[in-house]
Image (cartoon, rainbow, N blue to C red; front, side):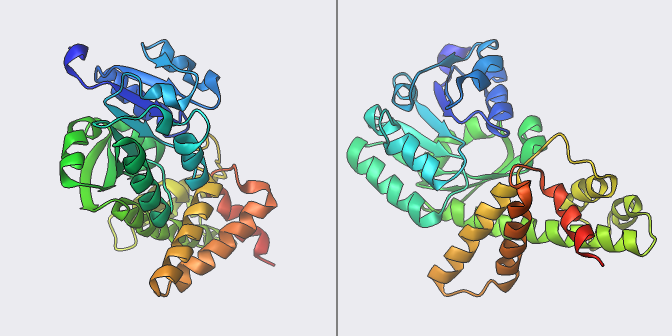
Amino acid sequence: MTASLPAIAFAGIGLMGLPMTRRLLAAGYPLTLWNRTPDKCAPLLEQGAHRVENPAELCRDANVVMLCLANTEVVREVVFGPGGIVEGARPGQLLVDFSSLEPAATREMAAELQARTGTRWVDAPVSGGTPGAEAGTLAIMAGGREEDVERVRPILMHLGQRLTRMGEVGAGQVTKVCNQMIVACNALVIAEVVALAERAGVDASLIAPALAGGFADSKPLQILAPQMAASQFEPIKWHVRTLLKDLDTAVKLSREQGSATPMSGLAAQLMRLHGSQGNLQRDPATLVEMLREQCP
């Protein structure tokens, strides 16, 4: 079965990358891995994956090279740095980037990679968090040539319930910025709601079930409000630093486009304040602590 499937290489075995690669292995895809911290590959090696020593080696046998990395700077280093993908990439290969990056930087890197190697780029950021990655129910928003997106659709449908081509390269990243604006502002308002309910003498653990199915309901409400009410911040499902990075990208993009984003600008300031208090590596459910502390 595996001989008929395209070979996949994957860089970035983190909170999202680990469950995504597990699903690819379960679907029978030959999988080659690289991660800056090699030990994180161990559980996947036990399932039949192979590990290489640098990103360039990912391209040796792969039809599709996938990235799920922290930010624009890390992607640039993995693709164009010493021992990077650019040293091994060749025409006919596709690079699929699940990372959340600056749209302009994505377009620049895609153009450079294609000019130097003939490898084309699909930006395919995802939404749904680690539960979505584990269940294969991610929402995937893609930018790239239509034929390139369709070529990887059968692979990506093992990871998500929905893959939407939003336009040319960079369009997926713009859509992810919009997604994160909604998610981050939601998370901050939910923290305000839980802190206010507690101070007013209402059992905040009842907020999410009470509002379920109503106009205020949302996945963030159902996930975050119970965690916040119970002060349950482990296991970490995502990071404050990720939301802050994406909010900063949103503010930068809004300046570039001449668009007003006052709510997201305020959210970025509040997220930065929370992060500066030692919370960058913690779950965004910890935002409720900031709101509790701000109350007199």
